[in-house]
Amino acid sequence: MDAASWDARYAERGRVWSVEPNPVVVETFSGLRAGTALDVGTGEGRHATWFASRGWKVTAVDFSAEAIRKARELQAAHAPGTAGRIEWVHADVVAEPPRQDAYDAVAVMYLHLPAAQRRWALHGAAAALAPGGTLLVVGHDTANLSEGVGGPQDPAVLFTADDVARDLAVPGLRIVRAERVSRPVGDDGAAALDAVVVARRT
Ligand SMILES: C[S@@+](CC[C@H](N)C(=O)[O-])C[C@H]1O[C@@H](n2cnc3c(N)ncnc32)[C@H](O)[C@@H]1O
Image 1 (cartoon, rainbow, N blue to C red):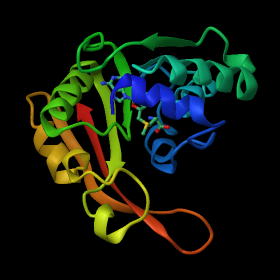
Image 2 (cartoon, rainbow, N blue to C red; image 1 turned 120 degrees about the vertical axis):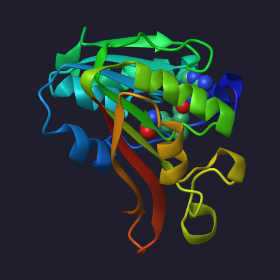
Image 3 (cartoon, helix red, strand yellow; image 1 turned 135 degrees about the horizontal axis):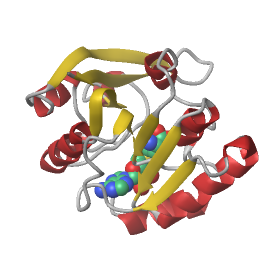
Image 4 (spheres, rainbow, N blue to C red; image 1 turned 60 degrees about the horizontal axis):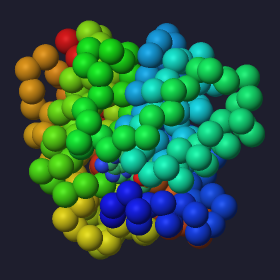
């Protein structure tokens, strides 16, 4: 989907994603001392707002202007005390790599791109880490198509934890977690399958 398609999707209805952060974001970053965070493909800003409400100074990037507008609204409504702590950036993360060596935490949540673009975006995300920084990549797993619910239905933009680990096989980065995780959705026992990768800059 291009930026115009995402704009249309976000304009269509109130809230597309939950206000609550993904549990893996909470699990991965809760124990870390607040520093600088980058949210790549922030959408409606739930993770950027979560980081900011825990004291982090956040840069949140999305190429959908409508997403950024809604993210600002979410911040104002749910975390008014964080004003000034999030820089909302309207940019294409494939065309404009983020600042290098700058962030203690980088989150890439459900950014589904064709493989070559994904690799490029993930290299940019990894290069954005400061020494000792932590990178989290989560997305709908390829197996979600046949064994899970929801998410993109185009296999070309899905990935496994192994795909991401291979993308991130770059000097100075250590993979500390790479697995498929089942995420309950709704009350009927249905689950989505996510690919989860955590890497640390050495
Ligand atoms: C599935 S949403 C996930 C939003 C958010 N990360 C979350 O978990 O709630 C993917 C987001 O990535 C953004 N996106 C997709 N491709 C992008 C690109 N090349 N540059 C910047 N943002 C992009 C879309 O506009 C959309 O908001």
